[in-house]
Image (cartoon, rainbow, N blue to C red; front, top):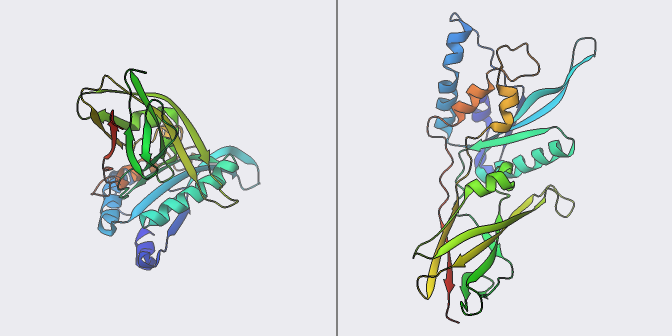
Amino acid sequence: MLESIFNNLNTENGEVAVLISDMKYSPVGLAAPEVLLSQYSTDISEKLGRQKKAVCLIGAISDYLDKKGTVMTDKSPYYFFVIGNGEQVAFMRNGISTMLENNKRYIDNIESGFDYGVPTCSFGIPDNCWQLNETTPTFVGFDESANDTCTIKMEVHLEGYRWIVASEQYFKNAFKIKALYGSNVEVGKVDFNIKNITDKELVRTATAIAEIKIFNMAMDSEVLEWTLELPDTDYTLFSPYFDGAISEADVTKSYSVADFVKGIFYGGVVNKTLKPNYILISKNS
């Protein structure tokens, strides 16, 4: 099925393919199912590795009805597997995830093959300094005689990444910042502003508003280096559906999908490390 999708997908025109399935692997052949399943991750990695496309697996739950129409469970997992170029896959990821979350059917999303480039941010009103201009990450006029701490408010844009990054636990682990010339820097309060629908359209905006405190400046100027180390392979939220999955017949579990996820991250289909960004803090005006 993946081969058929790749053969008919034209990403040069911005096309995106979406496979909707329970993603349970049903191996057939002379070899025992256990033997074929052991090769599954490798097979998936080889197919995705040849294509070098961005991919995203979005988990959802639904009612599962038996032949008589009786609901056996209201939490049967299934998946949307999105393939294409990074920008288009991210757009589809946000749209599909939004619709699922609005209907209380969303589990999580996980992705690979992205080149996120440099993380971006904007700034709020600082304390004990001021921003040189709106387009430059330069803050001047830090007056230690008035207050030993300069505080800037970074608004880190997260809509381009996995949704779990826009939560306090994951953001604080992902957000890395350091002073290059010996000053002290700390991350204070972090708030989030998340909108999955903007101007009545399926356009996600997600921002972490972090207080960055700089003190004990070693010199008159300091450079802060910051980036995001994303939780690429963390599938904690999928675990209730992966753990204990030993049979295709179990409609509450995702048999073999954990092996599929492992295959996504084998064979060079990885997210590229985000490049660092920089902020200048100066005591001079």
